[in-house]
Length: 540
Image (cartoon, rainbow, N blue to C red):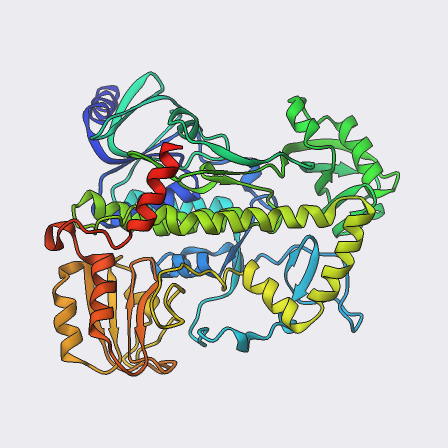
């Protein structure tokens, strides 16, 4: 057995993988699966010895998946493997609706809740009855298990207990040192969290703002739990939230001083803090678990330096308020996977990989500002309380609630891809063809789709020019939303759409932009502005 293990390790050391991924969390695992789905060889290096952790379990391991993440999992055939959401409920929030009853909570902004019943869904023109859920409560440990099982089944190698300590980059690839060993890949992607070793070793700039508070996630025993209400409560001295008896989250607006100190969160410290924030004399009798975090908000100024890329928290960190970090990271993986795979296989149009930064960086910046805005409303001072009251009034309106829900649920996510149709740059509606399959099901092999509702021979001929990268799908759908045809990228975003006139030149340009390899059409980039911007970022 020892001989076999030694031979396996030696093979890993000698192999040159298409991609080495640092970090085997949800983002790294999803990215690895995307790459392996496209027949790339992938090695994952994870510093933790074991995938399981108390922090990943209920209720601290609860994460809200938004519409974009739910769609992504469905488009890769993974959604049905998640079971925990069937037994989980949204954590309680304080407050009632105008009728005085407890609202059906759809989410929150700075602790101000909105209910599903207050949303005007008619504003979301491209949501269909066959669309997947706008949100789904998941368990982090289960999600990682599902993604790890998927990655392993596709041939990804996951090596645990190996923290990256150094890396060297050349024009042809990257070599990393981890656990006293060397590993080589043509590309390296850092998915290794907010303290990313890859980001630091590769010299990425990480710009942003310093924290306003220290947050605490704790599991304690209370002598008098009835003194603390369930739900989230913003007080004159901070915030506390109790999702279940003894499971507490605290926010102390100390400028992040406690976390920066590196001190452990003791029972005595938490006791003092909890009493001050809650305004009660509640007593903690035992401390079982305590972790600290802050609202530090930073983002890599570029997501790529040569053959090293960043995704997830390695590329952007912010307060966990609203739970958007996981969704943002999964979106990074879905966006990057097919583009990097096409680049590796020599099938990428010029500038395709540059579009990863061009598309994902603005969304990351929006989420960081969304987080900062929530922190500003929760600060224990008169200005924040005044802003809080105004935002609460706005969110009580139908338009206000719909706007916030669209951001929280990811429905308003949009890439600026140009194009003449308003659907371009949005996630494709989950069209259900009359013969049965949905677009979500048709996207599972990971290729692009030219969807033709009217069996146009010219469109079929055009699709054939792009080989197996673009699949032609024809036939009527139960609800076509007035469309005649649409070009869909492998990540499920619409690259071209038409209702009446089928502009073949516009379609051809869009198809070339995403699916025509340089070898087939020369080296002219249709994403040159993004490419030049990326060069400038790297130079800076």
